[in-house]
Length: 314
Image (cartoon, rainbow, N blue to C red; front, top):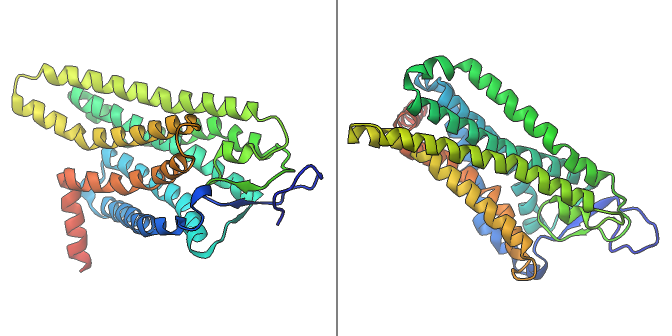
């Protein structure tokens, strides 16, 4: 392992991830919160996936999209949190260059995939409320397949340059990453080369992918609210909005936490460095834990399916 190298020209072969620079003696206590949240996130998402698979009444496009969201949540959790816990519990701070760039690729690809899934789900709700008569002919299983292809390829092609640009850099200085995860800039700034292309591409790709998704989601909900206002019956309006409630709650939480992380990361001098690091870790854990719980509690069909699943199993 190569540590704290200077200008000797020695190449870094692996990175050392120290997580929270100012909390080295106490950071392991965070595992008291992170470990139960990981178990909750994985357990809730696996239960939701199994419920959708077993319950034939849930074999509909809306629930297939929810299954895609759960799979993305599981992958994001397993990519980030186990390594963080290994650092806290067993001081396993080293990670190979290949492993680091792979983690970077998965994080940078699957997080926008989750955003794109929220966008497709918003379109699903838009069609259901604004064009209910055409819903069965528009939102079909074929639509879900095309949506999944769109989610994968759009984000794969757009985010692939991020780890590629990081991997092409020459790492001949310090190999100590002041982060819990292989975030693009945290790793790139350790190189001896110019990282301005890395910063520029990350800025453009994040705002183009997540920014466009957020704008289109907000636009779809503007159309939904306009359609709800036109409904004569108050009960019909309440029912229409309730079908969007779970989705809207998760979208607001997902993007709020993400925006807070971005702005705290930019305000480096005003905010302790540990804050954006913690927010980044939590953003890979709290939404995956909340998503299946919110849908399970607020969606009657899923709640009944889960009860039937546990009744059948036990």
